[in-house]
Image (cartoon, rainbow, N blue to C red; front, side, top):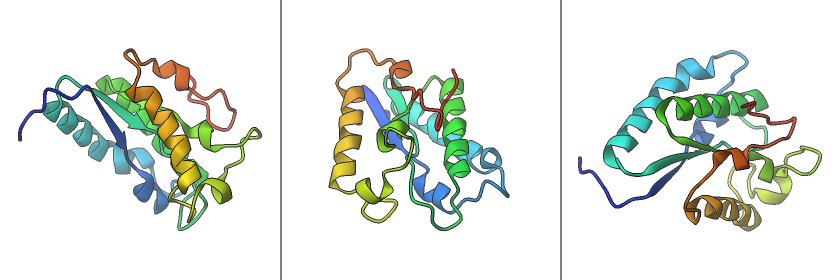
Length: 153
């Protein structure tokens, strides 16, 4: 493995396909995903020693397969805990994909209930530019005050 020292930030988007098939009402998200995520963080820190490691939350998605809203929330809380434990940043853009009443924009922002369409991608890119072009990134500024997804610092 070769270390890459000229990278400032690494943004990871993980978990959507795993959560899509995961039913947290019968299984524990932490038991299933903590160790693989910890291994990923350690590998990223090894490969990119000088970079900020940033994990984007899993976005709301249409209910399909065994997915439940609880699965997404549990995974995002796990990801937040791992970020706290390893000095990474948890980027919460979940509320950017909800309307003013906390309802999911699935029919409007997704082309197939899991993959973003052009409008959804523009929203995600706008959110990610916040991270990329800031010299000092304050993750608290992206915490959603919504009752539908509150991380409770």
